Image (cartoon, rainbow, N blue to C red; front, side, top):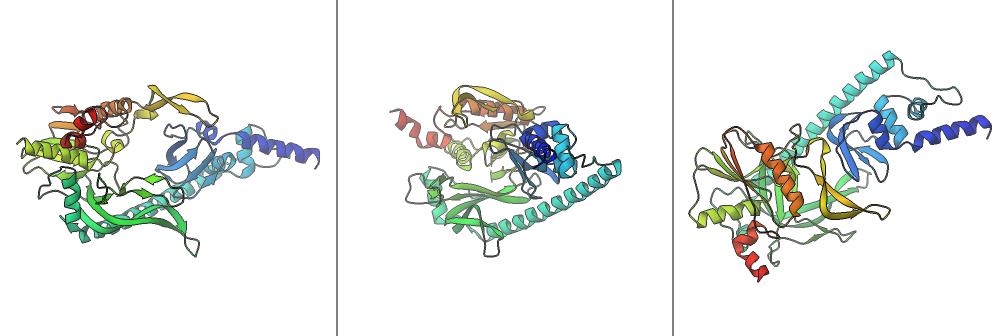
Length: 406
């Protein structure tokens, strides 16, 4: 290898040494904050969070347009340039062989037009997939059974009373998918790891249109009534709940108001909210103007923090990949109004947000502060209800917090 070739290889190596996140910062990509991954719109096909950079692996990927790789490929994707021009942009040096060229204004215009077309095509593809998935889930919902005994037994075992208007159905043999596998033709398919009875709850948008399902797998033999599901390859225990379809910005209307809704009780999990409904019912506090709503998870209840705001945890530590201990940081209390969270109808004047006491108190407190700020509106009173630390409202309903203390 001659001197020119050696110089060229060293130049390419210097380009490769630039990390993906440095490329993103150089080109002002808007990404979420995170210790392991950062997500945002794809510089090639757009979207909201389909593009991710893994900081530990120094690798980027888009789940829609399938672009992936390391720094040079990322620069090519962002700038729409060839390999040599990407290396020049990364190193700030021309290629030693005198090769390569920067894109002309016409080249840039042509590439931007191609990107726009690619974004529109990717968005259309995503929308087609979402609509097909929504239709599949709606068919599943309509075929499920109302008030089936296994579902009734599950809620009864938790001490929860169900009104006739409760929005839930039962599927006797619901599949549980986790990850992907390739079929005999090399196409990616969802990996089926479990089947069993499950409760289905509909997720709806602000107009009441069906958007997806919240699914809880059941096991009558277990104390909490939920199935134990394990990954067959890793042995990792997986959540007995899943959301399919579109959750962000939507909600699960568990019990509608019997008249015009001006009060709302909203929490993360359906069992938490229905525990409060049951307590209100037993105490004679039910009102015709109150609706009971689940957000499906805490992130959708509170929404994301603005600009990736992080706050240092006062006590908890994490260990990085080289064994160093650092203070854990968690999302801060300032809401990002540009990104979705569960909607609260404009007519709601009294909102009660339910916290979970069995989650980390510092993390949950900041999340609830964010929820209060996000859902604030003129004339609306917001209250945050907290169970005893270390417990949730279903524990309180069943008196389990007293048993554990004793």
